[in-house]
Image (cartoon, rainbow, N blue to C red; front, top):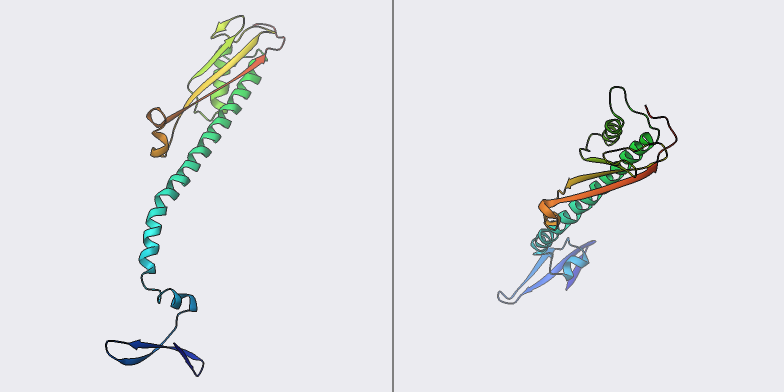
Length: 176
């Protein structure tokens, strides 16, 4: 039962054991009064938070892993495109072979993350950038260490291997 006096709302609580009538200031909202005066809701919220928090972190770090994976894949594609564009011209850097120059361009375009760059051509085979009019393929592989252990357990040693390659046809150039 509720009693309003002078704009203030009071709760009238009957104490059965003491057979008395208490008047107390009631400052809670109607929703809190219906739920049992708000008692115990802090413990319930803490328990729910403790159950949801690990799932939230797994989801968050999983999204970060996917973002890192996508960013690395884009970086590798960019490096391959730059190396391929350099390769088709038949040029080489001063004091370096054509194949070493292509690898250097790929490493520079990737920000230095590439260490395993393979060059093959139709006529020259593996390790050759080919001659004028030949088709050259540049391939890279990169191992990305995942930061989420629960997701990483599905991959060998928590590492995801990214493979990428590109194929270009060499322009007509004079061999030097």
